[in-house]
Length: 424
Image (cartoon, rainbow, N blue to C red; front, side, top):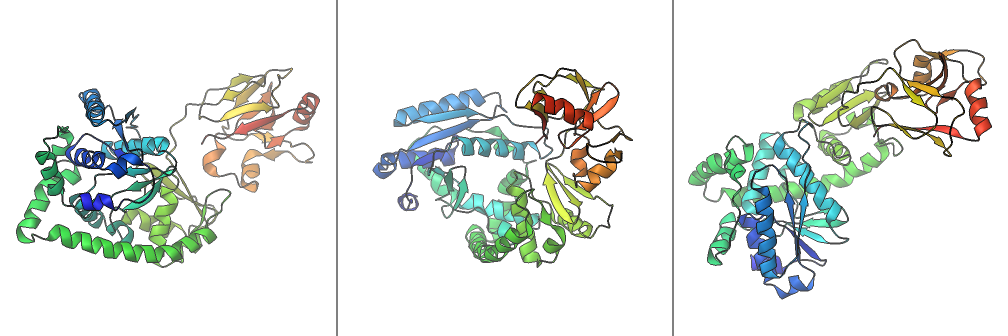
């Protein structure tokens, strides 16, 4: 293990410290390396608040680091259980969000992931039908926030770390969730891997060797799909050319889609979901397919792919009263006047129910909102959120997009305009 850690590249070091045996061995070994301490070695612990003992675990981590003369920053995570991605994935997302927020510039976040972890990761990806990128397993290095994730022990067996803990009599936390065989990784670790190693003692070495070959193949393909990504993606609205994406070879199509989704904090689809996206890419004009899975939905609209987190159901009130103050709308959008000013009249803010019409200033005709939205290419999933401004029973403005002659005169008199910020 010391040999792997001695190869550490430049940059200050922060250990992702759970208090378990693997991160404990890693942190203790680094703490006894003069070079690591010289580079501002510290630890970061995330308290997920999911176990009754989590506060005690955080206190243990602080005490262990204090005994080593190291700083241990503890952060409490807010785990969103409503995202539909499962508790384990939600906790991981919350944990990495905290890591990204609190990692220092050019700092290396060091993980105790080892060869057995890599083996499990590759097998899980294989069982989910992954391609070269997934079968390449965890990368030794990848960007995170303003720093870099570093996993120096991917060629080190778990037993080496456990022997280190025993040899130095290190106190460690035991998280009982690691014994829950209903979780896929734990079932693989405690049930499947021992059987594999009975017949193939070198299974972990062989699997991680294959992972390196897949990683090399994936890195070679990345050069081509990244070039395609730049040409297919609209930088302004972050959508993808659906037919252009579909025309790519599968070896480029799959990782490009996953990269596009991950860059937005969304999850990649299963093989079946990806095939459904491919089938819907040729949807006829007027059709608006939506492919959904936990945490993500992809729309096919105007021959482009659009991705977002599933929208939460919004309970729209009949109306809100508004005199120009910043107004937070029920879906999270905001309506305000710029520059800030107070209206001389009270307007009511309502939402589309169907059949609304407005005569935009300078237009000879009264227009229905449906045709205005289509002409302006406003995505269907944003249309219900556009605030409609009424003076009495007269619709005088649609958000900040269309204003009647009455609205133009009113806002021109004030020297200000309404501004609508859609919900993110």
